Length: 122
Image (cartoon, rainbow, N blue to C red; front, side, top):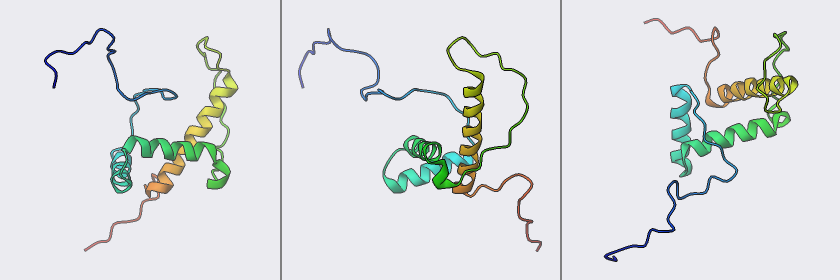
């Protein structure tokens, strides 16, 4: 080890490149996180990578997964921030997110609300 290091050209932040990735904050069910961590441990990768791969696979290959689009609902006109996103693009993204949530429920075996199996009585 050196006694001194030249840090004049050093940069703060993550060592790994985040090119093509965006950091977000998202709330997920505890069961989703636990299932993703379990899969990640078995695969020898990170749980965020597992979640990213499942979301990418569901979004890109909707036909393969036979994801039915959610029924159209009438909504008030959205006030979209002036960043170039149209109302139809927002609706399309909403439909994709609903489909991804359904796929996550299917893959992780999470029962849908109201369709839970009755608990056996002892």
